[in-house]
Every structure is written in C-alpha cells, then in structure tokens.
Amino acid sequence: MSKVLAALFLFASLALPSAVGASPWGWLGIRIRDLSEQEMDEISKKYGLREGFGVYVVEVMKETPAEGSGLQPGDLIVGFRDRPVVDTRTLQRLIAHTASGETIGLTILRREGRRRVSVRVGTMPDAVAADRVAAEFGFLVRDPEGMVDEPARQATPPTVAAILAKSPAERAGLQVGDTLLEVNGRRVPTLEAAREALLGASLERPLALVVLRQSSTMSLLLKTAAPKL
Image (cartoon, rainbow, N blue to C red):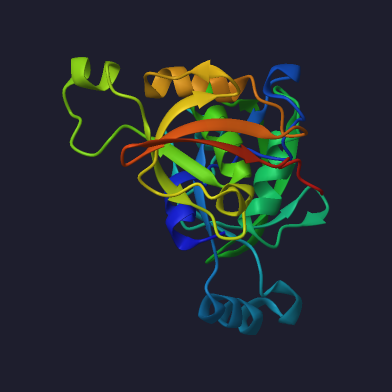
C-alpha cells in the first residue's frame, strides 16, 4: 500500500466480506502503519530474525475496543491468535473477517517485551466501512478541498483524493481530482451519499463509476476487488 493511502485510511478493520450488507465488519479502532526497512532490521536484532515484521500502532482511538483492551500507541502487533502478522493489509483483513463481539488474542511487542492482549472486536462504523470498500478498489473520496461550510459540503459531490498504484481504480483510469457523480448507477451528490452507495457495493463484482473530469463526463468500470487471504 502506498504511503499516501496508508496515512489516509489504515484502520484496524479487515478480510472483507463479499458485500457490506452481508454481515458487520470487525473493528478495533486503531490507526496503523507498516514498518520501515530500518525498523524491521532493528526488531530482527532485538527479538530474533523471525520477528523482523509486524504492524505499528500509530493511534488508539478513544472509546473503542482497542482502548478498552489496553492497546497503546507504539505497540507492535506481530500475531493475530496464532497467526503471524506481517503487514497492515493482513491485519486489517483478519480483523474485518472476525464477527463483532468475538474476543481475539493479539501478540504485541513493547519495550518491556512480548505480551498477549485480548480484544473484544467491535462493529466498524459505516463511514469507515465505506472508505474500506473504496480502498479495496484502490481509491479514496473526500469532500473537495476548501469546503469547510456545511451547506456547501452538502451541495457538492465528493472528489477522488488518492489512488492506489496497480489497483482496479488505477487500471480503470480513475484519477485524483475526478469528481464522483455516480456509484453503481446511483447518483452521489454528497460524500455521505457516496458512502451509502459504496456500502451497498460487492467486492466480488465490478464497481461502476461515473466521474466528471474537467468538463467531460466519463464512465469507468473497476474490476472486482475481492481479496484473497
């Protein structure tokens, strides 16, 4: 995942269901990032060659399952149950594939050493889930820059804020700055409407978009983004 997208929407959530409406997605409420090569080397030297991997916890959101479990910023998650966690995408998908209310065990590394943390998985908020659908297809939508007035935001379609390299979105020709007009045949005059449409999309089917680029309207078809674990 590119650094731009990682900074924008790496939430602990993930293995996405085939359709958002099929079942609630699991969610912890943390912001995470992959390790740099230097960090991997340092971890390998400190904990052993097999431990030069993991997911770094950047932020623990308040009043979330993660906060209740005792997870802390700076924790390094290296295991989900008995499965190694090597990157953010793996962890996100494992969490999202876990039913809300189920308790999982995470193996983490802290300065004082290795420990196990039990977390009761919550349900991913709709706004986050919609962003996850877009992320799986390789793009992110946001209100246009400079839109701080609420009435203006409510009357303005969202724009594409980021594109993931080698994703269905990039292959279909979607570009940063495109204005999103329709999702799967549904008009999306606001960011909220776009998220609602994305929540109804299936990752096992192509995503049809209509966008405005400069003065031209374009129809794009993003091929299936169904993940493989």
